[in-house]
Length: 150
Image 1 (cartoon, one colour):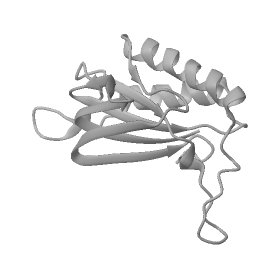
Image 2 (cartoon, rainbow, N blue to C red; image 1 turned 90 degrees about the vertical axis):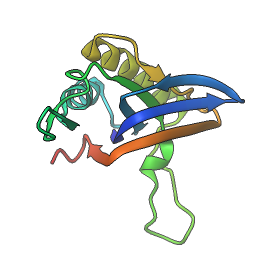
Image 3 (cartoon, rainbow, N blue to C red; image 1 turned 90 degrees about the horizontal axis):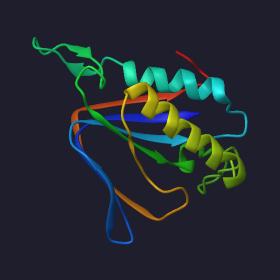
């Protein structure tokens, strides 16, 4: 799994002109799923997202997690995170999972993040044409690949 984690002051997902999810302080997480992803990837990544200390403490030091701040999360499926740009100018998305594999893993990730955060999270809608708005706070943006745990 690949994830782009953005610390936000606010974020929302709009589908067909209607707000599907919106949050104030928290994280907007874009997630790309590939066939090799497993429950182990979900558990590891969810733990990282919820406990990553990227929010300022009282001294202005990034020392608090979204959970510490009682923040919220929106999780949006984003197959383009698996774009291969090795050849030509048109990206290939062959590493991105098709719906029959990706949807169950995406749904498991929603449940895992909600459990780890201790409250429901916002989501996008798999396969929908979504308009994602955010006010990136900092800006703070972290990229994680469960296949390359740095």
